[in-house]
Length: 507
Ligand code: XMP
Image 1 (cartoon, rainbow, N blue to C red):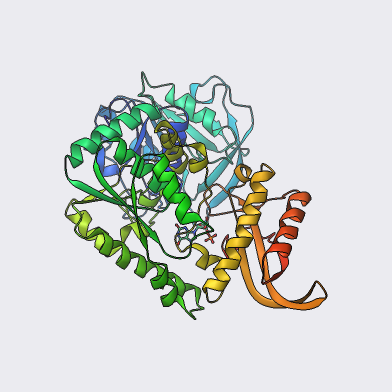
Image 2 (image 1 turned 45 degrees about the horizontal axis):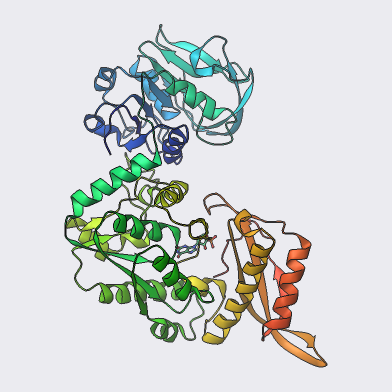
């Protein structure tokens, strides 16, 4: 991607930094994240944003910025939270450290007639998360907004420098997008972000990087790996797409995945490893042990199928690459522990054999890219499905009988969601098994069978989730069909737990 007149976001370690990048793209401009010490690498940006960070500017190892170099760009600069404190110090002001952190909503009161708050209400809710506050100001620094107590929370310095104490990138800052947009309007011209251009550049990049080498990628039927495989195919790369059937898939899923790829013109190699997985899982009840078995076996089976890879392509997304690490100066270089970062892959990465073309994108952008690649909406709209599959939807041991019961219940529930037009309105839904027997009556006989738990949630990032108030009629029909058709189930429960404290899966 060429980096002319883009928005460079310098990462001082805040948990919200990647959201800034996302918000800028939502406003239609191309944004990219850099470590503060990477100023020399950012080319010719059109605007620069200094993110927040977990440190206090007074700490010895607090991240710093080459201020002289920053000024040389002669473009608008916005310091957010830590970024604002740092700018205030660089401009000769001072910052008061506090041991208490202000965290939560505050009122923003813009001072009339300034460009950053054009069109923003007189009093607007913003989200604070900081411990330092500005104390002395440079004589030319101007206070452009205060909080409800009259404390300065936004500053402007000569030369197009702005500071805001709050986080405009989080939705709790009600007019944050407008403020961010007002800042970006200060830039002369900015490179626009269009997914079509991005797609073309990705394809060119892949062609250049791969040439005629063979590329291997794992596919699961999920959105990320599907988009990746189609993208590689579109780039005319010699690609092998490998799909491991671990025996923990939903009803008819292996066939559906094969058909979907066939529809998209990408041939996949299916490795049926269900026996191996189910044998290894027999009698294992501990959730972590189940996860470990599945994770390790996946690696073995996948790498056996791969053989000798010239290049391994992965559908790693932006949030997978960046992880907050409060003891690190820069987040951008820190990789969270993730299945895309097991030792074997790190080794290949060292040898330059790993290709991750989606690493700059967020999930919804991947969907957009998928649409630009012509992938059908039903494939792009599939609910997320966990790598360990149905094993995390069956507390205790998994075996074929239990898995088959889950498959039947799940197919009925998902079918009802689709029939009633609710599938696309929920973020994720499934039926699981509660392997506890209770008494019931079936026909004239007493039954002693298991229960199924239906779960439907809305979520943005899976970190938190709300249960969905599905229509009673939908639940009634799902329950009736399950009780009538699924042998082994005499009770249907609907899970009304939020996350936290519950999780989405039962494990
Ligand atoms: P929990 O149960 O932690 O799940 O609330 C959050 C989201 O993550 C999915 N999930 C996984 N996805 N590999 C995945 O790719 C996994 O090991 C895994 N475990 C949970 C889960 O389905 C939900 O969407």
